[in-house]
Image 1 (cartoon, helix red, strand yellow):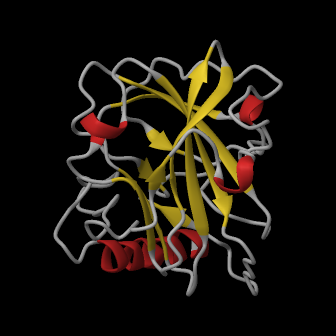
Image 2: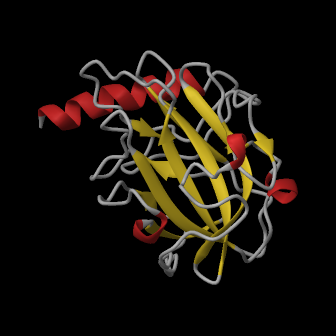
Length: 214
């Protein structure tokens, strides 16, 4: 019960941290909770490219190459709740999240999404539908600092392919990978993607749980 009360308080922080511009991801489970919000353009450091900064993909793959191990099929569900089912620290352990047609929903269902320990990496696999214009990918947190970075890869024959986009802003509160209205430009319909959520460089949690949500 104490954990649920603490999480409800953190969900309120997400709403305050990410909802200043009025953009919402819909209502959370049970109705009324706002999630998946972020200030338009808050992920200002987001960029595109064929490889990760530094010449090697953060997930450990060779530059522009394939990662060993088969990535799971995304599964049949539609716009489900994203949960942090451990272990999900490698692409082959990615949590299947089905088809994404709108904003990400995360942080409202156990196991809660979290960056913990301080070098944690969470992988998720999803696919797009025929219309990607409504897809919105942002994650927010109540931790007083820069918690995480996001990297998006295309999946080719159930293996990690090229880096599609990265978001590594150093501001507190939220990281935006696919902003409102940019899904059609950033994503390809009917395509499978791998999302890497990685601890921000130099992260020190100081006892914080590192919870994040959308």
